[in-house]
Image (cartoon, rainbow, N blue to C red):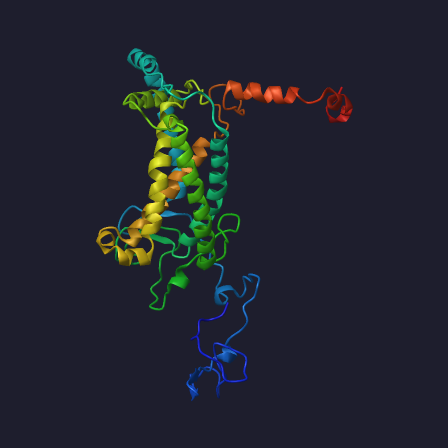
Length: 385
């Protein structure tokens, strides 16, 4: 990388350059001739490389890794969020015990019978159109790049604030870097941290420029995919699958939650209709979380913040940055939940669950369509008999 230098003209007959030779390196001797100004930093410049060399990247900055996220729980006390793993597991076990106890109560049994958890929408047939599957595929594919580059941008200033002051070591509510030392020359570049390349994109310390290129470029494709999804969603009536049309969705959601916690799985027939919890989750993601990601992303723009001062006076860039991160956390939980990780606690060993009986039957029919001559030609070692 090269340091920024004034954009000046070169002397006649000389190759154009941002800087000009001087009497001694490191001085700012200026030579004026025919209206031309030259600074003497040529000896300090070097050609940029087309590959990333970690030893020389960002001026040879050391590879200081990020730490586990820490949440402020007091003025000078921090909670390592890795503790949420055992704490969450303990709470889950306790919730299952409470759910089983509630499920065995006669009043709760009557409540579950009255609100089984699923309501079939009217005016739309069963099945999932192909365009829904393709939009989900592109959405998840693009989100992988958006999430990885997003956390890389976070690591260039690894602290989140709600305060407009944004003083490191004082105002942050979450950080992924060690405390700021008592050094008057501590800069934002010094505060940046690196991520493993399997996690961050590009995964190099102080690479916010490349990370923003990835993040904003992929964001455009993500928004385009979302716009197509919105149009088709309302044009085909598929919105009825993910938009609540009755207040009964809330008692049905409570019924589904009790059934999940008691390990008595509710009827899973998403080919026809989502259960109430899935319905609320999809509605929140499509109509609340996705627009909020766009709004908070725009709220981090200094240009927009200066233009719309009425909003930025009440909704600072740092607040938008923190909310943008919380939306990311929600998306991660949603992806993990809706990816249908094959858990089967109450029914024996862990197994893969197909989306519906019709899906299973369609898969079987596709297998049966394999020509008989191919099956006969299969060698014994490959499974043939």
